[in-house]
Amino acid sequence: MKKTLILAVVLLSVVSSCDFVRTLAGRPTSARLEEMREERMRAEEARHQAVLDSMERAEKALAEALAAREQELL
Image (cartoon, rainbow, N blue to C red; front, side, top):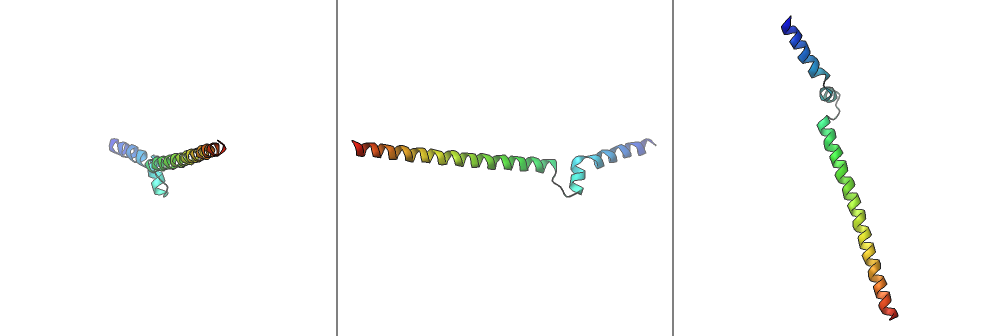
């Protein structure tokens, strides 16, 4: 009786774990979901940095154009 109860508890905990069920269903596990979340964050940060870099280049080009125009006027 005691062995059966222990076995039932162990099986219940294994079968009821979220990752076990997700794996059986062919879905990503919690570890994979975390990896995907981190990948998404890195991609978002890279896009954000690209926008900042582009704005910085545009600002620099504008400053150079204004300086050149100012030199023409003098």
